[in-house]
Amino acid sequence: MTLEQLTIFVEVAEREHLTRAAEALNLTPSAVSSAIRKLEDFYRVTLFDRVGRGIVLTAEGKAFLDEARATLSRIRSAERVLAELGGLERGALSVFASQTIGSYWLPKVLMRFHARYPGIKLKLSIGNTTTVADAVAHGEAELGYIEGTLDNPLLRKRHLTDDALMVVVSPEHPLADGRPVTPGELARQAGFVLREEGSGTRFEFENAMADFGIAPADLNVVMVLPSNEAVLSAVRSGQAATAISGAVAEPWLASGGLKRVNFDLPSRAFQLLSHKERHLSKAAEALVAFSLEG
Image 1 (cartoon, rainbow, N blue to C red):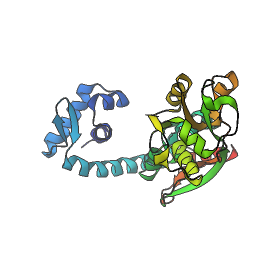
Image 2 (cartoon, one colour):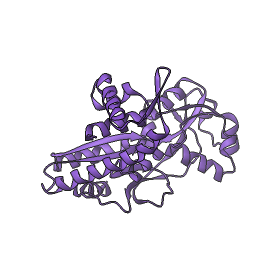
Image 3 (cartoon, helix red, strand yellow):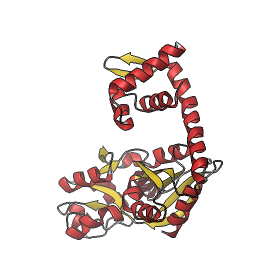
Image 4 (cartoon, rainbow, N blue to C red):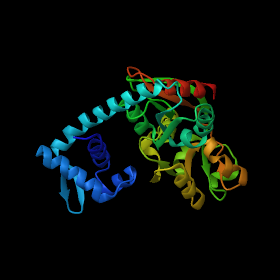
């Protein structure tokens, strides 16, 4: 078994899709398929079932995936140790961030870090709060950046800054007139376009509404979309509302394309995650210091 075969297997297993895995690896689908086939043939085990035009993990494939991830995590750890010997002159650092902090707060921190340590290759992956926490917990990322609260005993959390959360609508929406809105009125009149389950923005909004006595099930969620940009596009185009970071909404509020509903939501924290039991590389420690400076 080669490192390349192991990497290809994990990429295919996580996506259950040969072409998408090939794109992520910058390989051809035939090369990816060949690597998987050779691995299966050599060990005489079926890792994927070919179902129609797609593939799914077999029971053996699922069992092997945990071992493969752990092995790759140890290899990445060995690579980091070697990179440290160069005094941060070269190396790689994998970072995961949820959408809001990854798009609107983190880039300036990463650029300052790059200016100081240009030999460190930074890889930023964007997901939601749940996927970021899972990446740090499983060793796929050394550091994670999320919005809001998180309950995971494996992870250490550091407060970075606070972020204003607000409800916004199109200028034509009945709640765009600036009058104060009660929680009940908001829940009754606004059809909501929200991010997916696992999003920090959605989690914090639903918790805030629950504190006002409005259960998540009582919110009229008319659409669920996977990104802040898609959510705002939908809200600008129709009679719906959303809860969003002030940093994300600010350009549209300034241009008049969106209006803030006169309804106060509590601020939420931007937080930095690391694993309590995993060694942080010197590059990660340096990025932590840059991040805490803001």
